Amino acid sequence: SMGQKVVSFEPMDFNLRYLLTSIEKNKLGDNVTLYQNAVWNAAGKRMAMKAVSETLRGDFKLSEEGDDVGEGGLYGMDYVDTVQLDDVIDEDVLLLKISVEGEETKVMDGAKSLL
Image 1 (cartoon, one colour):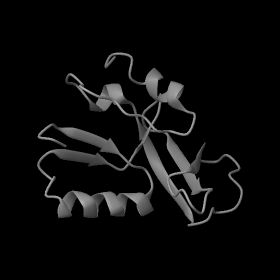
Image 2 (image 1 turned 90 degrees about the vertical axis):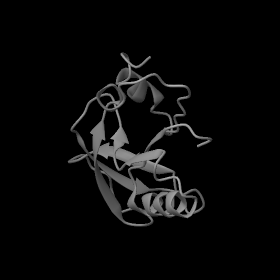
Image 3 (image 1 turned 180 degrees about the horizontal axis):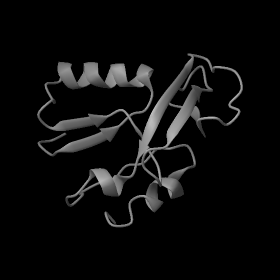
Image 4 (image 1 turned 180 degrees about the vertical axis):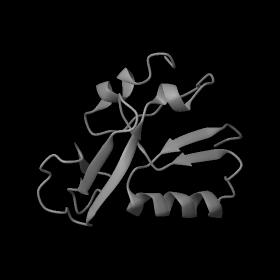
């Protein structure tokens, strides 16, 4: 984090455990705020997630709860609530890195004030 504040969002339980371990081992707890949410264009939606790649564990399918998402994925099914960046971040941002498997416009729609 190079002394900067980091705000991170990780919706999947499996990946969240690795992030928490890394934050603790590297003594970054004072600089990192971690949310277990999916970033979206609307807050408070309940989303279903399932992993779809054996080699890339961050690759998952996200669907609104109630939609037909098929089988439970490779590592089971996770459910998570959505947040908008505008609702969570209320300060200047030096860098914004987004990796949401083609859903960038949904994230940006929820960050209009931030940007």
